[in-house]
Image (cartoon, rainbow, N blue to C red):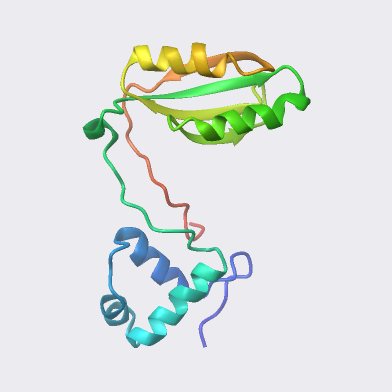
Length: 160
């Protein structure tokens, strides 16, 4: 019987399924079954359980931002005046499609946003007009990405 990782609750087969689906989320049950030497129904059952547990949150197509007009990437650190402004700020962040990620962070800023826009002018509008106009935003600090060497949507599945 495969051992279960105490931290993640995953066994070796589940971890391998995640690795294979991460590499190609369009793999069919038969392909996964062949790779893992299990039956297609057994694989389907395991994947369904991973989905029900919330380990697999969904499936997406990874899009090349520069090929769809979102050439400029930036990180925007946002400092709020007071914690009471948090809820309104987060509601506005959720409405802005240009914001890909929003992280509550420790340090000088309260939030770190990863954004993608079409141009520097669009970045200026996002920061100056959209973000700075939200009640309670005390300051922002923007770092423009010059190039990206590594970007992955998948967390590490095991410790090295």
